[in-house]
Image 1 (cartoon, rainbow, N blue to C red):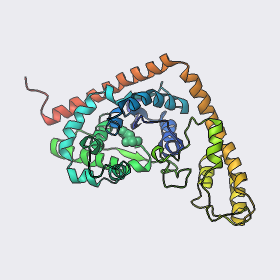
Image 2: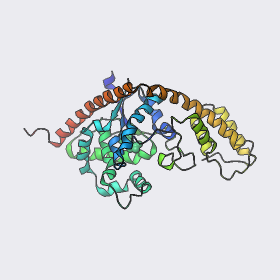
Image 3: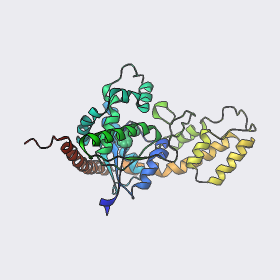
Image 4: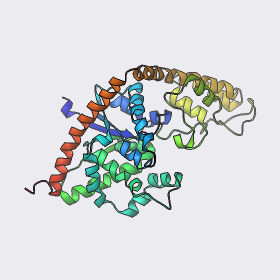
Length: 335
Ligand code: TRP
């Protein structure tokens, strides 16, 4: 039966703890779909190194953290395979073949890559390894024969390049690779606590899924709201207001949220009350995650096992695809 299941492949760079933006962008989908799909989740340490090659220690330290984050939010290692990218050298091999199918200008025009280069101040001095990460991501996705890739909205231009590579490969060498679909979450790009367009660690506007209660309270109480609203009796704006966006995303009590919105629009509720209620909703959401994390942290041998057995199983899947790719390229049968 499991052989008929369609496959999911998705992943994250191990550079820090996962946050609420990751959850509504992609993680919730992974947890929900893991029973329905044969799921592989990739800890993209090689990709993280393209971006942290001067500090690989940061990547090394965050691999385990990411595994623990996954397990804490409900990724079940009995049904989902957690794979460490560097332990599957076939992915680097596939990257090498795919590099021929992409030109420099196309990579430089990739909006996600462009935005990241700008953020890091690297536009004038582009590291080739970093520029190539969409090609390596195409290897990740095709290397597991993925049917579906659940990701946050910012990743869509990267997956689009995968599709182009797949088409080109299949055209040139015969149908070998699978073309993936994408799936973005209910809030594909969650706004930051500071009202900036995107929750992102580098912008310092995140709430982590393992945030402590004290720190959560502090972050919620200092969240950006409607800047035009100086007093509680000034009518306020709900649309685009991060506090209400988070209520919509994380407060299961819809009636409470609707009442708060109505009162806010009429100037009948203070920011503090809206934030207090948001804090309660978020604490209810994060508390079980935090507690599960604390338990898992006490069992490092279990985490080791998840990483090792997942990477081994992942490698088997990638070896199969790589054999097929070698065959299509005609480099499998010299002697
Ligand atoms: N680029 C993704 C990110 O920064 C991580 C990633 C690596 C990924 N390989 C992947 C996502 C394959 C989806 C599929 O979050």
